[in-house]
Image (cartoon, rainbow, N blue to C red; front, side, top):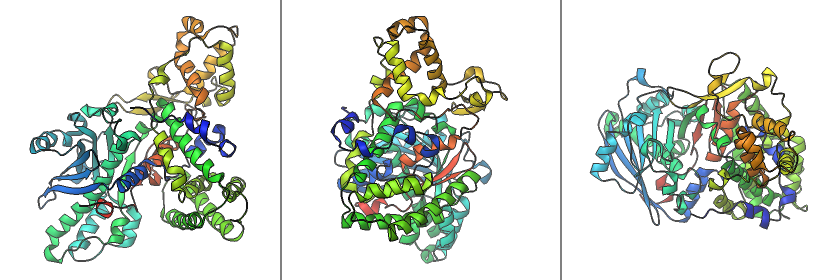
Length: 559
């Protein structure tokens, strides 16, 4: 598959003057304030299915009176179809856990490539409920599981069974009937590797299979509560209203296992951020505001204010961010209503420049999403640049001189040279892999054992050590000669070299410092997924909502 080259954005776009600098964008306090947008992966998936007139059906829904059984939801595209195979279980309350070490769930799923036959369903029934303990095949594109939001799930079943709609405040407060605790793809547990599907246009953009799986899980969660209500209430039972149905998404519990992805995939990270920043720059460079864009922006701002009002968190830091978001959006609304001149030259750029001086970071990042929202014709093509062929990033240019390498460090990694890595506070943490679940974890270097098994996620410290080694070399020394003497710097050299044409490849913060907030890394990635209602439960795990407020299969295609 030939990937669209993000470098073409820089070569062909006349927007450089309107792009934010990497040293501003790539700091964790800003990455950790990211909001979902038009270029989030779930939005890209839905747009494609609408544009290509995909069809959807439910060829199997075989659940008993306890809500136990199997179902299949199918998406039929122009060339391929995909089926979410669902298994519903009768899970005792004492076994329900969102922790990754759980061994049983309310529901388990696999996204099947094509339409499964009876033998496929039987094979999956023997393995999918086991999750990590089972094995799937290269016909499966993802493996996932979910638990009920028990209080809301039971409330909805009880109300529908009596012919009543659930309490709207409870719907709004929880926001989902089920939450996934893991959605695995890309070759895990026997599933198909990404290279097996990346030549399909609908799978080129990152995480499309996973997003499709979660979207169908949302439909399943609604169908199962309505099934339970019919069993309980018979003819008196009713279905969820359109308003309540729309208010429900799919929850997700995510921990530290997601965070290292952004460090391990610098080319992919660069492409994601590059696409978003180019989109913002394109909007800022517009010389006028069209009536359609004006109305679209105003509507998106109203929705954002309402979303911020309904968004709650028990985490102290997130509560501070929410207060800043709400006050910032109120200030933005006042400015837009009374001050912003939509007839001036480059009005969007004027609005953005005002925001940089007047709004907190949380509200600024929300404004990015708001400005992109009414400009689909201008920015949606950038989705094609968000995938990456990462194989060239493994290459290393041994002919580069030490002087050239050091110049790159000075221009791209000045942030890495600022910490004092001899100071305990600047090396307080270490990343490692849990022996139980083979998942990344974060340890306290001077309080816990295991630092000798540290993962190489300390990019800043590695580059600082490389910089020290370069100071001992003549500037014309080839990198290859340096590596003969000091091979331990290979990884750092590779990262520095690939950053030469990828300004957004690195998180520009110390990832082993005492001040690190890992949830900032989680929020950055989850915003690109399209997650809303970011709700940290500690600095290391978070709950979010996916697809809330967005259409269901029967609203965008046949069923």
